[in-house]
Length: 288
Image (cartoon, rainbow, N blue to C red):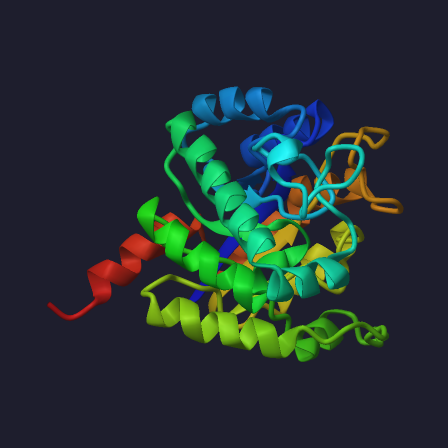
C-alpha cells in the first residue's frame, strides 16, 4: 500500500507561508505542517491550525539559523551576535561534542520548544528540525529523550532514494553534497528502537526549494509502496525575514494545489494523511 504524508516546513515563518499552508491544505494535497514555535508568524499559524483540525501539525525544531525560544543570553554557545541560532552548523556540531555547557544549553532549548508546542494545545503529529540538524547524533539523543516526555510518536528521517529521483526526472544527476546518509540511517535505527514511526523515504531533499508542479507530479507517479513523506516549502510570495535564497516558494505552493497532483494520488490509490493517522493504523495492525 502507498501511504503519503505531504508536509510543509517552516509553518509560522511568515504570513505568506501560513497563507500557502492553509490554501494547500484546503484546496490541495497538503496534509501536515511543521511549526516553528518562535518564528515571527507563529501565533498566526497556531490560530489557523486551530481552524483546520484536519491539518496535522508537528514541531519544526529550530537549532540553527533562526529564532530561539529561550533568551539568547541563556544560549551563549548556540546563538550569534544578532540573537539568532548560529549558522555555522559544522562548527556548532563540533562545539556540541567538545563543550558540556553547549550541550546543556541545547537540551534546555529543545525542551523549551517542545514545551511551547504543548502550550498551543495542538496534537503533536511529528517532529523534525530546520536543516535536518536532528540527524546529528548528540542532537538526536536529546530529541529522542525529551520528545518521549512530550508524546512524540513520529520523526522525520531524511533519506531520499536517488533511484526514485531518476525515475521521476531521467535527466537528473545528483549534485555533489555532504553525504548525511549514515547519520540518517543511524537515526532511523534509534527511532524505531524507541517505537517511533519513521517514513521509509523522504522526498524533497535534492530539490529543496525547487519542488515544482512537474517534479511533484512526477514523484507521485513513481511513488513506491510503503510510507513516504514529501516535504515542501510553500509560500504565496518571497521577501520575508528568514527566507532561503533562491527558493521558489510560490512554485512549491502551486505544486501542492496542481490538479494533476490530486488526480495522480487518486488514480494510484495512495492513502493521504499525517503521521498520527498512520501511527493509529500501525497500532491497529499490531498483534495483540
